[in-house]
Image (cartoon, rainbow, N blue to C red; front, side):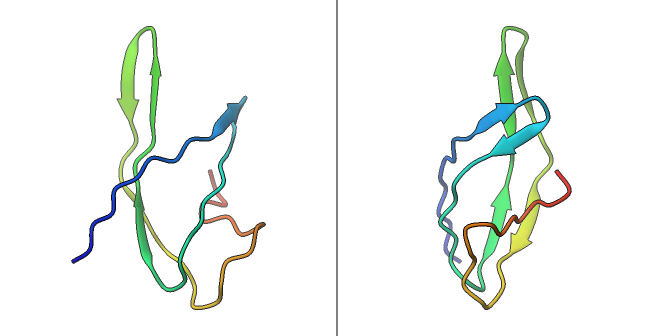
Length: 66
């Protein structure tokens, strides 16, 4: 099994998060989000998404409900 850990940085404005991801087609991705402030760090539960067999476009969003 291939495990490529990486860090994605994005921008949070209010309740909107944006980041640029270069995703491969037909691939499972696992995401854990975290936030750090003066009170400490908190982590989300793991989110698993698989990209389609069609190459993702710039407007594709793997998390439409976030």
